[in-house]
Length: 234
Image (cartoon, rainbow, N blue to C red; front, side):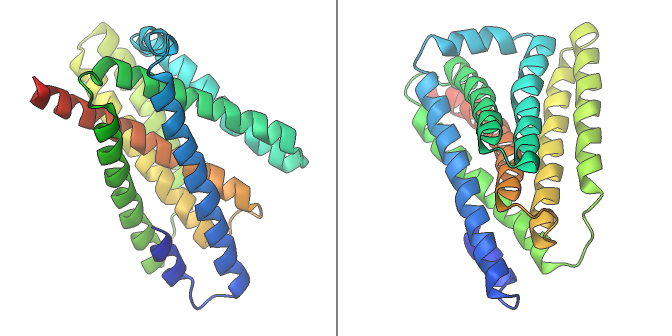
């Protein structure tokens, strides 16, 4: 992933290249810390609590929206105001949201010693997805400025389809999960494009945006990997 960004900006100024390296470093550190946090929490009493919360579609959406969505909003406000304390609080809230969700997934599907292998596989798959998106964005001149709206549309559609699934057909909840996954893919595309276009003045803002999108992709991939490994382990 880093190589893709670096080569794509090789003809730009040295300052931009260094900024991109910094963004990748900060984003990767946030992702790595969150993965370690969810793994650690999966062995604590917090994991079954998270499993209980996310077993309810509406309650799970509410917890995720408040923690991840609310944390992202707070972090942005902190950056706009120049308050690292507020920014740090927002990032901590995002970390806790993804950590709780990931721990719940690992607790539900990660028995039999498959948690660490599943995380490893999910990390590789997510890295490949990110690298492909980065290559497409940096190797083309396509305008992805509207993709943030498309991502939001996917999240709203996923909420509507999931809600319908609760009352009509549970299969729709699975469809909603796929739509949410697509939303994070679209959002990741936008965030990488924002880096390409220097959309945001703050390197940390870019790093947080990419981190949130990458983690959204990761937790979906992790869930599918865990289900496959769990089925094979039986």
